[in-house]
Image (cartoon, rainbow, N blue to C red; front, top):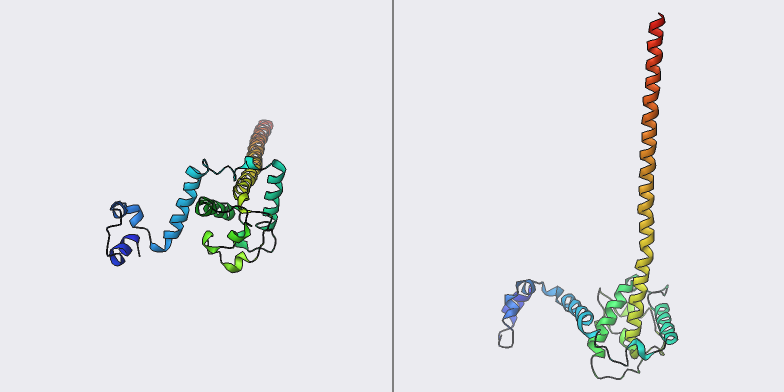
Length: 216
């Protein structure tokens, strides 16, 4: 069922609906089962385009010294996607980055206490996507000294970690390309040398044959 069909079938009073919703065909044609994914995607875009610039001072990296930031990020990584016993669905760093963005948009944008353990919010299934359930979330536990206040620091730490991993793969890819080019050059050189040698052999044989005919 599409968004448009749902509205037409189940929402009798459309006085509170913006008319542009149905006129926006790209949106109204979305299947209803994908609407949550669509909403979550918009949350992540909203964070990147708007909220990141206006992050609260008490959440910003400058609120913590470098040693504390490093300790918090490393402890979080060890307890979560780097944990061996964790489910495969949670071993992707991208899953955690997306979840932390949604957490900031939904929770930290409100006026709430920041000195509570982050683990409390990590256990909420509504902040996760890709079918993450309670059983999956029970497979890790972040220590209580890591607080809600550390969310943005952890997010930027994971983003930097991902960026560093991507950059480290670039030389390897480049090396493979160069190795491939080197092999092609060797093959071309071998082919040229072989072709030259074959031509020379034919010329020598031709001369010998001509010489033999002359003697006869």
